[in-house]
Amino acid sequence: MSQSRNTNAISFSNLNFAYNNRGILSDISLQFETGKVTGIFGENGAGKSTLLKILAGVMSAEQIKASELQNFPQADIGYLGQQITPAWALKVSALVELGTLSRESWSREEKQAAVQEAMAQTDCLHLAERKVLEISTGELQRALLARVFAGKPKIILADEPTAGLDPRHQLAVMNLLQQHAQNGGTVLVVMHDLAAGKTFCDNAVLLANGKVYAHGTATEVLSDENIFDVFGV
Ligand SMILES: Nc1ncnc2c1ncn2[C@@H]1O[C@H](COP(=O)(O)OP(=O)(O)OP(=O)(O)O)[C@@H](O)[C@H]1O
Image (cartoon, rainbow, N blue to C red; front, top):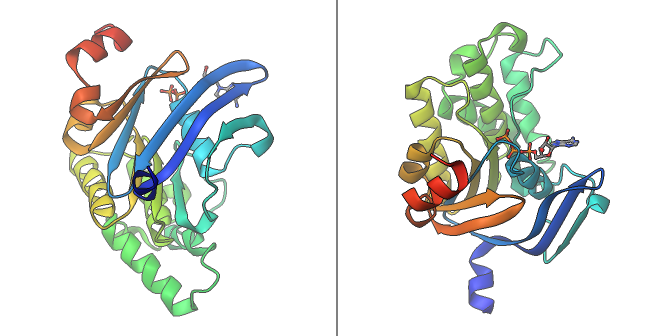
């Protein structure tokens, strides 16, 4: 029991969550292992983004009822939310540098090196001097992802990270997330593409009606039968 706990980066039981008394997540217990990419699947409105926001610490703690939900230091979590359009005319390099804010012990040089590395990983180096308001949707998505990588988080929570990306960059981003897991990180990724889920995720969670419909290996969870039951296709 204690050994399995050590290999779980995130673990919680009986999680309940409601928006304005409307129940969204009900009695959810999950464990996410380090070294694995776990895909979170479910219909629109199933609560995938809400779950990720709770784990990212974005939601007010008073709204969340759960046992064993460990609170990780914020610096260990990199959260990529559904795409936002920044309202400021920041340069891409400045946006990416925001990812290092929580790393207070890093020197200026360490931060700069992390920013450069993250921009290289996400193919953003050529965008460094451009304004975030003047780049394409896919370029912005990569810059936002670079911001996450710049902080060198152990846990990455990514909400539809390939949204708006062309096939080459979709592949590159999923490969990066896999690499992060293989290097000992933990990756949770909200996805809609079931085929990509089977290819890139080790494990999967399928949410339906506010509950966990299935949790296990991606192949088990994304079976034809489960997909028919949940999505009706
Ligand atoms: N801030 C909010 N206030 C009230 N209700 C909300 C809020 N955000 C989301 N909801 C509702 O909570 C439910 C779950 O939303 P959530 O965004 O978690 O779903 P999702 O599974 O990520 O959906 P999608 O696949 O469409 O992104 C939906 O019914 C949504 O309308």
